[in-house]
Image (cartoon, rainbow, N blue to C red; front, side):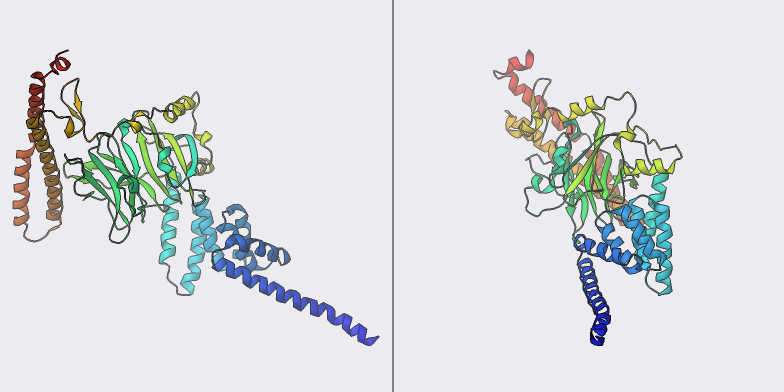
Amino acid sequence: MRKTRIKSLLLPVWWLCICSAVTGQNLEQAKNLCKAGEYAQARPMFEALVKKTPNNASLNHWYGVCLYETGEYEPAEKYLKAAASRKVQESYLYLGRLYDYQYRFGEALDCYGKYREGLEKDRQDTGDLDKKMARSKMGEQMVRRVEEVQIIDSLIVDKAGFLKHYKLSPESGRLSDYNDFFSTRTKNASTVYQNQKGDNIVYAARTAGNGYDLMSRSRLVDGGWGEPLPLTGNVNTGDDQNYPFLLSDGLTLYYAATGDASLGGYDIFVTRLNLNTGNFLTPENLGMPFNSPYNDYMMAIDELNNVGWFASDRYQPEDKVIIYVFIPNVEKEVYQGGDEAVARSLGRIASIKQTWKENNRYAQLLQQIYHMADAEEHAPKADFTFVVNNQIVYTSLADFENKEARDLYIKAGECRKQIAETETRLAELRKQYAGTKGDRSALAREIGQLETSLLALYGQPEELDNRSRTAEIGFLLKSDKIKIITE
């Protein structure tokens, strides 16, 4: 009888030991999954463990991390706050990140500040955290100056091939995937913008450090492309620049870039070309709602239809992007309502209907752009556009019937190329001259020589075009095509 009683007393102890061992094994397994980045698999395991011991600070932290890493920000906050209140220092870091993604930048700064105190106490480096705090401050300022933009549609599409959903009119130019445009297998994650005339492209090319810089090329008379020229001024930096788009004025450039001036990964910037110096001006971050703590890029504006597009991976799985269609403002319209919750909602684009105005005609506009005639896509590609007269337009060298006219047109193209190369060299020398403190006489002489040669070159392409046109028309007048010209 006594032996039975001893056994019955030992049974609960034995059972507790087994349960503790099993719990320890599950905890270790769940932590290993987290370390391997398998948060979705670890999540139900931590959920079960937290239910058994809801006051365990470490378990609350790990479960909150799993929720955060799988995009469940709102439920993650409860568990991370519980862990932080019990002095789990790492929870403050995750709360800061969480608040950043919820556009609660002030609260993010508070959490980062508490996490920073711990790093300083342990004499650890705060460099990376300081960058996060700088971005939170940037986000806080962007929310205060969020622009009111009419966003008329949004499309969730595959990241691969997202450009096909941009319905630009031919007058706005063309957007292409880099690999398709250059027929390469390098798999550059970049795009090419080609202007309406088809004689100039702006694109992102890989640098020696495997990042991206913006380059331009001009069409040669033989149909090929000239040497790549990096965009000058304040555009190309040590970070990535990509996804360029030029307005029809040929001066206003939109592009995306990473770095300290960006809130997320890629942010969208705008700059203009200074015709006096040949350099682009200091770029301006477009702010919210165009930019976010995520990647935002590929701004394009169709001035003919007064509609724009930009892409973002905010709130999207890895293989998807969301494309927003909007109506560009003539001037920036900053939200003046004074309601922080509304400002955050506008910045996040929580609801596109929130941005709509009364008595709108969005449906008609969307129908117009989505059903835009695709004739240009099926038309033969033009090498160039040369107007002979008001009835005849040439698009390739094969169109010329007179050799003298053809040679003059080629010479005009070569002259334009020489002007472009001289202007680029002159801009480089001027920049070098401004940054040189010593003897600059040699630079001054070369700059003077180039300026003189440019003055001589200016006007020559137009003169050669006119001579080519005259020669071609004179030849046609003597041929059977005289009726085409005189009618």
